Length: 430
Image (cartoon, rainbow, N blue to C red; front, side, top):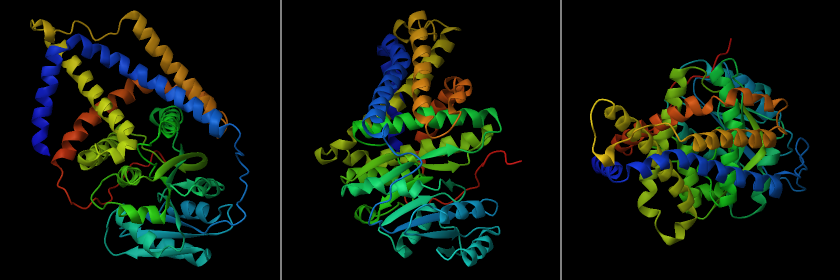
């Protein structure tokens, strides 16, 4: 697949030469179009499914199915206790917790063993060597007793009612996975505060809209639930994908299993609060999405997989937008020093006054709509609008750069190479 990268670059250069003006309009209008699409879908989701929910006091099913909570851990000495404690204290009558120590190099294994002596519904599995999150989840699924598996990260804290909400969509027999609602715990820096708004006004709204339009790009790997039989039908988590959550989401939906979003299922998570940590995380997300795209693209044009075409088109348009944005900036900069042919000339990278005002206004409306919807899950959340207005200035730039860097990394990465854990930035803890 790496041989495709050169022709792709040449094609984009020719496209710029032929459609310079149109390309510039695409750079400005594509975010506007997607913002309206997300708002319409998010508002419909809220009024159709979410508005009348019993948030905070879920009604338990009469015959509550047994649930297994899987928690893969790698070097989680400082987080394991609070993660396990929140998991074993779920407001649900019928569940177990399985912690998988994936060859940790710190005291994680000892901490998990001590917790298992305290909590009778906790079991611990130990790996001698680091095998990667996908393998840890596979092993957890192998020893689990439940048909339904709730998977969380080793530094995440489940809300007490999380699994009671996660199990609800599985009443429909074609639901293969459910993604929950991650909430940011690390809010000590500007980056942390902006991410609070991002997960609420961007990611949450997108998942609502994608649920309405038919398919979800990815479950949130930090909190997701699966039907074991659905996982079995598509081969469980892939061992060579660095974002196993994106991969399994595409495989399930390609196999005609539905993936649903459950905003009431809240999970408190840690996120990077340094530029270096954020860059590594978003680059991994971008590379992982590209790997899944390259893996699935050949089979996605089959009619039986038409439900995934919306996600496929959105991914391709997002990648094209990133390429177009960078191309216009490069051509504009070159044009400052030399005279370019008419088709390549980009006189300005500033949007016309009307379109610029419309784009800024639309961003504020989107943030407002999303934060109003999400405020039912977190008090004073609307104050995040003070910080989220900085999102377009930094995170859009970060997203387009990681997209352009991540795609060739995915092309050049060896297929079949095991994806293993790396040390991550968990934010400012002191």
